[in-house]
Length: 410
Ligand SMILES: *Cc1c(COP(=O)(O)O)cnc(C)c1O
Image (tube, rainbow, N blue to C red; front, side):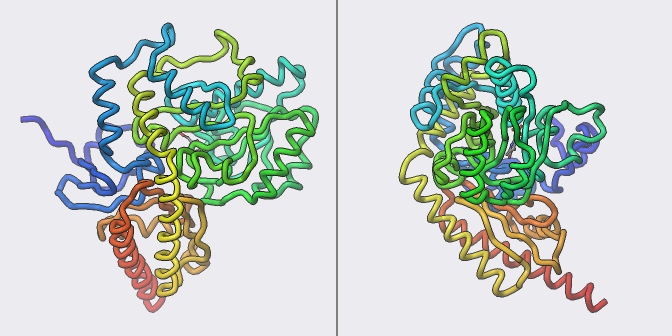
């Protein structure tokens, strides 16, 4: 008989860089998850904005199974049909002319940053190497991307960091104006900061960045790893803002749960990614590409995208109703189905305490930093699951409030 793993096996056998919750999900369907004990959960976490069509969506399962019987992987010594179809689908739906495929968001951003540096060297010279990004931003865990990211705790303790990186204040154009110059090669920004607390960019800020980049011949890179592929209510969030980047990165929802990343750019810029300059063994893997193509084609339809906007309104109504009752949120914000509820001063830093209570009530949710409760559910979550999930969230928050008043009395 094979041994059934328990949560303790994580501590015994796996590197200690995560602190997973105590329950172990074993099965998922739509917006529902089941743990080892058979307990059911409504999923507002979506694998951190990854499971864009919930769990085991028939369209994705079908694409995966069909491709699994056909061809998995051939490396980039050859190209393959699913990769070319996916690239064409992304080009036809966006500003981009060219696509580089890889396996994660960090890898897509690494490609974007390397491309921006190379483009600057080839067109302007070695001096043009400065990258501007923003405090509290998150761009991945490779050493280049943690250095560009605006959370020092992720890059400290690993030795010398890559140079030429400057940080400005998000939504503060003046702070960018102070840093930008002829030596700026690129600005990298999330149209809505995800890990940094679900903070949407002001439209004027993104328009201003576009102008500053044009004035200084710098490239504008949008990191849409979290906001992309329907999450914002458009295929990509830049389409809500009417600001077009030079390079865009995508991952998370792109594969609906299958690991894939993509970097999109224009013909003129892609030229700097000449043969041999960059690569990835798994990039454009046939299985991953087939699933992502099915996800993009399913999501980029008026029905799904309008559904996202409708569900956004429903989430907001529920969160506001919970807040009228319990007064724990200072602000509810976000776009589409990426929402954040910032805790009040009284509950400062307590967002993470909601998660285990929610799990007890049968709900999976997320945080974005210590102070923001985050939700990134399936883009097609049924309304009944939203109502039921919010009832569970309300019970969890009522318990948080009860705990708090006990401590206050005690
Ligand atoms: C999750 C995320 C990344 C990193 O993606 P990985 O797939 O974990 O490498 C990069 N940028 C943003 C905005 C993200 O949310």
